[in-house]
Image (cartoon, rainbow, N blue to C red; front, side, top):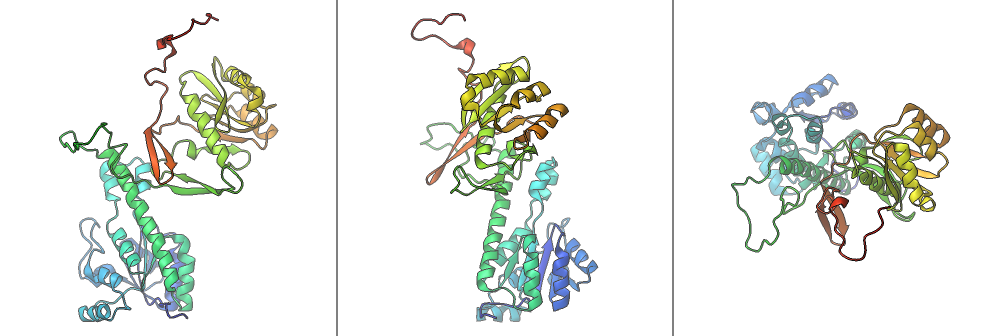
Length: 422
């Protein structure tokens, strides 16, 4: 055992999601680890045979305010924050009669899940965790002597360290602390995103500065921009084979192109996502007309409207049949068998649409097995667009086809001669 390892003799466990804690329970029982826990977590651990001390027994204070106050107490936080390599900290704990924790296991109230469920404001606010992040941040700050675990994927590692009696090394504790700070940062950023949207600055508050030149919508362009995305898939490579890439999802949004249902074909690539998203946004600019777009290398090869989706596809493909080879097709209407038959002889990487007729889907799945078939049931809703630049981020409101000047009937000839009516 290295000099930085600290055996896990006392653990604090407070988790909303109980999945996987049986792995910890078994290790705690076999190692004789003292376990302090809260409410339903304590109940679950006791069911698994773990001797548990309730937090209220440690604090001498019952859970209160409908569970809002459980662990916010010096008897808990002093045990988390005491740096046991510091003799003064150790002496103070002994004087106060407080025992230190070697391990803290926490996962937080599911705020993002609550938002996605459509819960009302009161229910959403109740899922803003206070005590959990406080314990996580305290344990992460004190990684000198405490291991903090927020990711259930690490439970097996914890169980192994508990079982063999070695505990975690300083390097491991710091790695766990870094994960924990990322966890709480993402959690707070998600809350910030929701509150910024639902609790905007009231008209009664005037915070304009003298040097303000352009009025700004603070809901879209806050003074400090905080957003979080969760990694969903690691992609084979980026725009080029030597580049790494991954797909991230907005935790508050379960809709949109990034959540497309794949009904057939090979896994999506980085370039597939870029092209398909561009095509998908393009066709919805023409709704309620039926429209089809063909995109390759993020450039439009063709875009057309028609009386039927098959007609729109024929016209879009005819714009530039050569460039359309190996491209992406998007439609803002259900793909019919007639359209699928038109797509069949054309080498296409991706097709995306709100739905597919059963016969059309069967044809595409059986006759074009490599074709990536995506279903996205709702039109694009993003109101803000982002573009990373070196050292910063550009943010703009989404361009819409109904913006001033987009109606061809309102265009004016400013030079040259009018074209023929044809």
